[in-house]
Length: 513
Image (cartoon, rainbow, N blue to C red):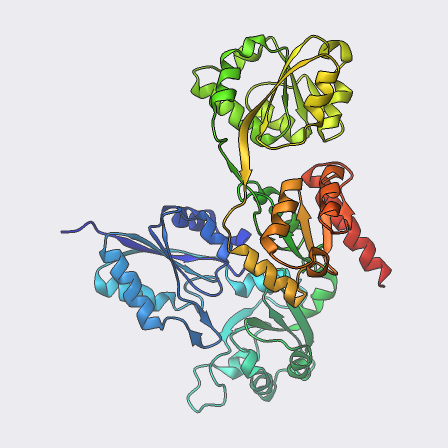
């Protein structure tokens, strides 16, 4: 007999990838196969192993990439191959997700399965629109209803007379039937003045909310062009949105921002932007790779005791230096006789995580800043090691040598241009005019981004787009590439870059009031 597989039905949550449960994330991490649909955030796939099979079976507004019967057959077949299959479903698997049907098929086939509940859109989407489903001043009852069923058919399973008496109602898949839903509720005694809301792409930066009453909501939804996927909320609790609309009031809400950092480092900037409401496109323009040879770095590590000062210019330089140090059978104790200098707090923190407290941290977050904090008497006659990228600005070693130091610059890593499909999404967004900003955190991210965009004037391609730079060195490169710099961080750190973007859009918003 073959190795028994299993299927885990995982609720992906309603759209915001941060709403995945810990157990759901752990299931994705152990999966051999991830079968996902239209409403599951693609970012959740980053938790899967690189070798995991990813299968899209999207179901969108009645259009099916794979029919439900085909999905059932697929997950059964993969499990019979001895694989761990995660069936990743938007919201909760058992709340209008057809998870119950899939579980029945698995049980009938004798396949082991588990269910990981998800944060249901019925609760999360109204919450992100500032609408609590229950409130002691309004109602203590709530119901979840399918809006996909035609309420005019003779044998409706929806008890409209009972629903009309429930305080808060949430309709899934009901946008196409909204006029009939409103009419049927009013026909069964619900007041035409009852507040109602339609929320599209809830919990995501694309969220769009329209409010009205049962009498007016259908016309309002048509007026603003609300289409699936959307949720309908009916009840006087909708009036609380005027006070509780927290998500759509975030400073970067709905701003579509491109992050060009390496895939490994993008998460810090992306998470900060996302927390402020931005719709982030991660388009890594550089990857960190080993140098062509570690010979120079390894030689420097072998004679590390000969150096009076070691200067780290980036987090990547720190990581590669200490990895090679450890691989050579040494540890931080060999740095005892040297002063350790860092450019910027992030680099300093990376050094501290390796068990070493920097003696000096540059206040100006570029190479020139080290020259300000290194006393001239400490430089003259000293031997200085700089483990850094294979290609970098030469001003620091040039100035240190001019001050009488012997400087060894050794390549600890190199930056290369990655292969990424995200650049096509960026090109399409620029063509559509849907991208608000592009962020550059180094000169190489800017240079590679322009090269990846392809032929044509960068100024024309990014016309009307906010160009955000982390600091003056990067800004200089951006301008040399033919682009204006709209936003520059006050200091070369990720938090400062985010603050600069917030200031820019807050000021821009005020100027249009």
